[in-house]
Length: 54
Image (cartoon, rainbow, N blue to C red; front, side, top):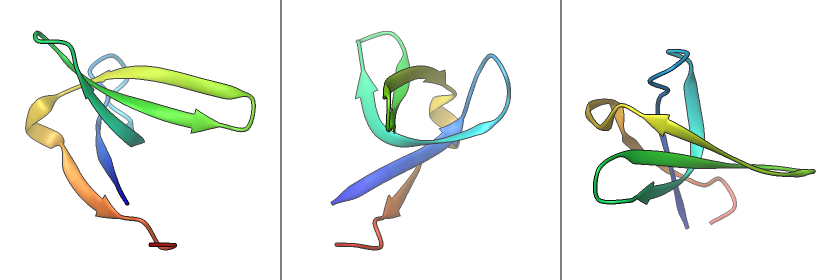
């Protein structure tokens, strides 16, 4: 299983999670104990990260 990390367009912070694409923008879906959040990211900063438990 892989996750991805990239820089948020709005905050500039690095986020990590599942990668999503809607045809116009790239997003990272972060999973939290209480739900998920979707962050729009800069496609030029996306990196693949291998999960430690895979």
